[in-house]
Image (cartoon, rainbow, N blue to C red; front, side, top):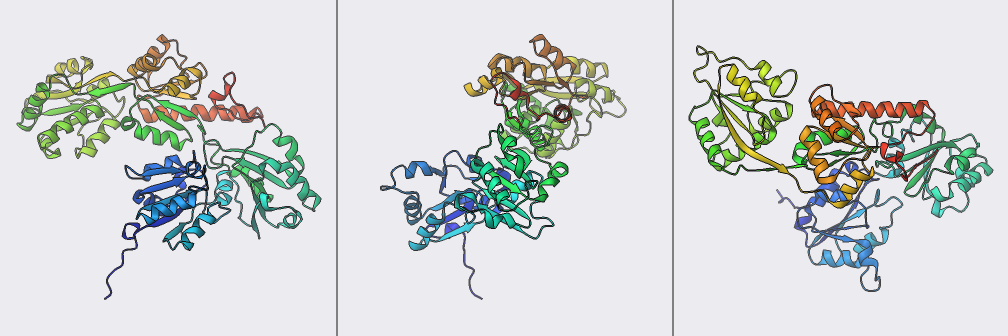
Length: 533
């Protein structure tokens, strides 16, 4: 049997991959593209484009912007830079708009690799011709005999395209959309033919104007359409009214401030993205070890030696603190064997499960210390051989849980597992956006997030939708002069996000019912950019 040959980029002396970056949505990058980015030594991209895709790269990758190497083409063109890096034995990924072989500007770069006998690969990408209509709710190639894609920059006479028997998709034509429409009508295409013009397709800035060839002029007059954009012409455009799914998401394009750390906000941010929002995590607290670690050291030893019947976790941070102590002592989740474990809520329970511990008790109703107490069993000397509970908590924890457990007959070791301090102020652009109305909404998940955010960044602008997790947080927000627009029915971050989505859906419905273009809250402030149909 012949030995296997390694065709991975690392096996080559030098290699160039021309990777289609897709139409704009970073999640439309192909698996092959992501894999090559993870192995790249050098990534070449256009200025300001595809930066979010660099999260697939390993640490230390060199990023080269094409404008930097093409500023002096006689000295160092993009093609020459790519060839130099490949000849030096490096793996180069050239990120290309859409699909590298579809109306692409990198054809000369590909040819240069072939001419120089440098190994290369062309990785197709999701093309805007199919992705943008799909994101606009238009089944462009469904039930039609023809799907035609043209580059307006290369068309002088539109007569041949006026006979298109299906869907006509036009690249690079938004600036000449009205003249193109008139030319198609003059060549015989009915002026009632449906047309959609979509700019910034598949991104949260996507915007679509639906018209007909005969009305393109007045309908686009105030739309502010710019490239990248597609013109989609054909009867299938009429399906958009019932098939639009992207721009109709309840929080489409909303910039939502989440005053939590990235670790805490992960699940919440994913949920917000599913509603079409753009979450931005801004930590308002910083978690630090206790000033005197000896108390935690004794608690961990007691836990291992059978001092406790229960361990109660009131936050994911407490789980993290105990887990770190376990690692310090070379312990793992097996040390919880024989112990009963309680979690105050879903997020804390998830942190425990990730640790390898499944909680025995979690409130079915209100996820709080009060909810935990409502379900905590009283101490029974016949059933419970030990009457002690370990509470690893923050330094600012209230005494309510300890008092309630004491009333139930338990003895508590209330241990400071971590300290919470106010985080450093966010960067200036974030502070300006908070105070200037650049955010559409802010989610407050506790009273401390209200106090700390105002303390490090200032009060949110009055157009910003204020969403709070419960009555106590609402009271704190109002004390700071904030108008509360949304309150969660139960103290859960997931329920709060869903309540904000419901609020956004109602705003959108009201605008559509009134015959208006739906606008985000940030677009309602003075001086904000406003698109008019």
